[in-house]
Structures are given as C-alpha cells and as structure tokens.
Image 1 (cartoon, one colour):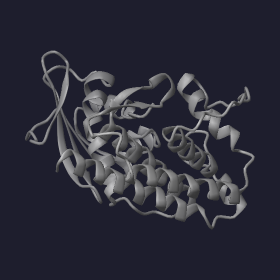
Image 2 (cartoon, rainbow, N blue to C red):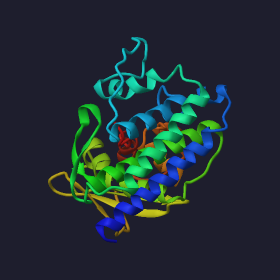
Image 3 (tube, rainbow, N blue to C red):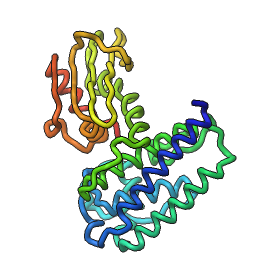
Image 4 (cartoon, rainbow, N blue to C red):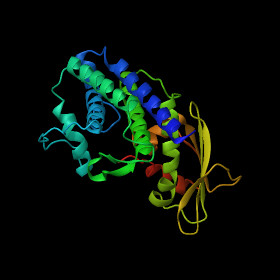
Amino acid sequence: MTDKQTVQAYADAWTQSIEAISELVAPLPEGAWNRPTECPGWSVRDVVSHIIAMESELLGDPRPIHTLPRDLRHVVDEFSRYCEVPVDKRRCHTAVEMASELEYTIIRRSRALRNNTRYEPLDEIRWPMGPYSRDVAYHQLLRTRVFDVWTHEQDIRRALGRPGDLDSAAAAVTRDYLVEMLPRAVAKLAGAPAGSTAVFDVHGEQEFMRSVHVDADGRGRVDGQVLLAPSVLISTDWETFARLACGRLAAHQAEVKIEGDEELASRILENFAVTP
C-alpha cells in the first residue's frame, strides 16, 4: 500500500473499533458502567473516559484542571497520573452523559480524519502522552490510536461478557504493532542471551508464527523464518497473546504451551507487557 492508503486503512480500522465501543456502551444501564475491567483500576466508565480524553486532546481540546484523590493505588507514576486526571474528572458523569460525549467525540474526530489536509503520512505531529509525549509521523500516531482503541474495546467486551472483533482490521493492526515489540520483550526486558532464539506460535483469529533472534550485541530482531530447534517455543491463542502483551493477564494465569528453555520462557512471559 502507499503511505496514503496506509493512513486510510488505519483511519478505517480506528472508526470500526471506536464505533463498536459506542454501540456496546450506549444501551448500558448505569450500574454496568461501573463494572471493573482488566485495565488496572479502571471500570468501563473509566476506559471510555480515557478514550474520550485522548481523542479530544488530539482535537486540540484543553486538558481538564483537576486534583486527583490520594488513595488511587493504580496511580503510581507521572504517566498514570497524566492518564487519570480526565478519567477521574468524569467519574461523576451519568451513563447518558458518557455515551453522548463519546458519540460527539467520535463525530468530531471522524470529521477531522476525513477532512485532513494538514498532515501528510510522514509529517511529524505531537503525540500527547504526558511524560512520553514526542513528535511522531502522522501515520504512526494513527496506528497507535488503533492499537489503544482496540485494546480498550477488548477491555470493555470482557467486562461485559460480549466477546468479538478479535478478527477485525483493528485487531490485525494491533497484531503487527505487538509483533514489532517482541524484540524489546525478549532481548531487553527478559535478557535473552546472545545467540538465542524465541519462537512465538499464535493461533486463532490472528494466526502467526514469528522468531526473535538475539544477535551478538544483545539486540533482538523479528524474523518470519522459524528455526527447527529454537531456544524456546511459546504457543498460545491470539486473545491470550494480546492480553499478555497489553498487561491484562499475569503470566501464571495464561494458558501457554512452552517447549525448550523454561527459565527463559518464564522471564519472557514475566516481562511481556509492552504497554506503559
């Protein structure tokens, strides 16, 4: 695909996923908005608040001025405080207010994406992420938003018992995003030794098999070719892979098959989450 086609594909994937969220939460009674999700410390309401906040900030809306309570245990650093401010601000909002604000935000953001004439795919744009804020290419920002929105769509689906969209376009974007993060998990975080290879065999809605080879300098790289005798082979289903990679599932809770170096596999799985 050309760069512009890639941008359009990301915009379409984002639209499908965020509209799915809107359809999921619009009919919910008040109590269902308070159901806990796998996103630490956040309810369905909080997840929707976060999505609204991120898209609103990209639209240029000012961040709310708000003082956080001191007893939020999941707020542990500057980034979590950054994310929590607009979320806590909305905790008193009703179900109708939340659903309406989400719908309005989707309309505004969709219009901005559709009518974009300011940014070319490779133009740099500010990515609002608190302490992680930096300039990134426009197409990269859109891909990250697809990843974030789809991940939170799955948070909401699991909280509500409404599985789905594991095979969507946004899921495919997320798959590619997470595969690119594998070298960091294997080589940097898990400290896999030079010369080792970890193979990931994922089945289900987003089926793939990838190798991460660690070179002599300790750097990892993804390879589509699979060695016959890797240091470790980790097999699981797509949803479990995504939950592990997004910090939604602890390694000891995951249904994972391991062949080879079990100690290395344990280190990889314990350091698998790539989200902040």
